[in-house]
Length: 273
Image (cartoon, rainbow, N blue to C red; front, top):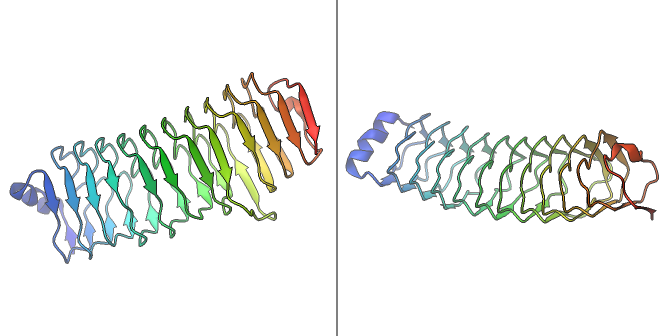
């Protein structure tokens, strides 16, 4: 049974700020609550499985959502919910589509459920208060997924990761640490695409795991505090990686196959372990 936009309007006649959807409904229609700016709290029933695209987009006063058994969150479902602070994603969720939480400026932490296999494009873009992210064993982080998350200080990447797409962490200017879960699968290749970590101006050091890595152009450009990079596995370089990283002075390799002109900067020390 689908909870429609007309159902949503009728619910708001009962209570403009707190919405409880009754048991029995299995999905929320696309745009059902879109632009309903006075809603503060939403409680979804245990029967509800799918939240349609744009369902709560631009509900600017929405602070809390309770969703016990949802399995799919649609495109831009909570985009522009500027006040959203509390949302616990249930382990039942397997799909979170693009821009679902884009510009949720008050969201401080999020734990992605274990069934989610990839982080969609633009998923948390512009979540400027986001400080903590817990990732499951995803294989891909989409483009602009965490761009402009200006409070994010660290990120731990899973050992299943194969692709970090372009601009994924663009302009995360407080990001200080990138960690990799061990052990990584040596037979797989990790691809970090164009501008993935550009303008991460607080990043000081990167230690790559012992895994084959493909690095696209400008993927760490304009990381102005970056001083040291360690490569533990074989690398493939497709352009100037560290353009405008003026403080980068030490690059350490375990493998000796590299091309210095591709780094985009001059450095004082190269060490082969």
